[in-house]
Length: 433
Ligand code: AMP
Ligand code: GLY
Image (cartoon, rainbow, N blue to C red; front, side, top):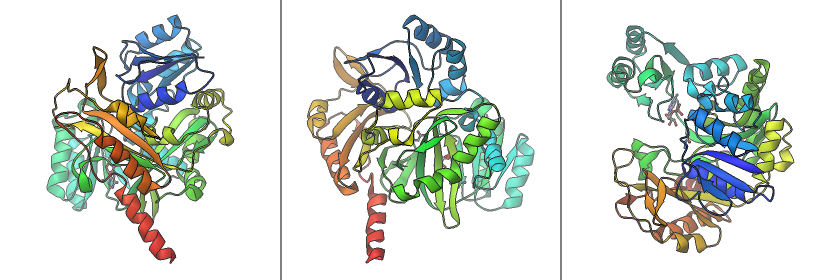
């Protein structure tokens, strides 16, 4: 089988790594890929992830059997529709279904119609009306740009002034372009966040174990929001025993609505959940694997990912195909100093071989490239060093041990990835006594 993976992050390196382990896979092309996605069965090709025409031409000329888009952009731009037009199987939703991520107003409407619990919300396309609503509510509000804003279009506003500023930036100044044509003003929820990622074949959803991301740049969840500074799986707040119940509540109703609308959802449907005192609430849907959640999740997957994806595309996914080790996996992101703001590129990375030689450790590349055969940084998030361990504490210890073997100037990482889970496990043990 010949596979085309689209994207260039740590998620895509993990996809290439896992797909490459399948005996059915002969070759993997990665468009455009990074410094870690070259070698073995895999080869990078310089076609951008949003160049839909170029990607279709590449898939045709390279006789690709399965396309695996990593990020959301090609999906919302219609890569699945375009590939299907050429009879090329593609593991992802069509552009209509991808609006679940591409438009927060669309996602809210789907949640409402399918009875999925979520924060109360009002949608505005008129700035003056949005501002009036902020003044009327006068409490904490979450302001969201409707469209894709590279994870930056959400402001959790404590008071009126902060909310008004956010509305003006999004709608007035068009800080995120057309993504801000509409805003959502949402009830502010309180609780712990957890991610539920399901593999979907149009009719069936099979949950992967839970994962928890760390979105803030600095220890203790301080600092600006990032794409994710580390993740681990499972998250004690959502244990395996509750996965089915949570999938019934937050994913399967959406899958039914998508199918009934003539757009059966194929791919990964990712529900970002807030576990509140009143029960779970969906904060958002993503229509793809999370980055970095994908790195620990695929580290735990024991099944054949290529077969699983093919089964999804053909509409026959069996839950038994999705087997995961009971071990815990934890990944820490190494970022360039300055990220998520401005940062240097081209910084040399050393120690990767030593880190990768530790049992159960994989240093997945994110923003890297090879210069003269040597890895240098090429983005804000540079690596995701991921380790498997018998439990969360051990996975954490191993991942940090591996991270300390890696050297890159002007870089930083968080020192508390997994701490929230470790605290919860300790509290659960105390309660159980
Ligand atoms: P989203 O892109 O919708 O997941 O929002 C990004 C982040 O904003 C989430 O991961 C939460 O930390 C926070 N957030 C989003 N919606 C809410 C809400 N209704 N209440 C509290 N925090 C929220
Ligand atoms: N790590 C969050 C995301 O991929 O959306």
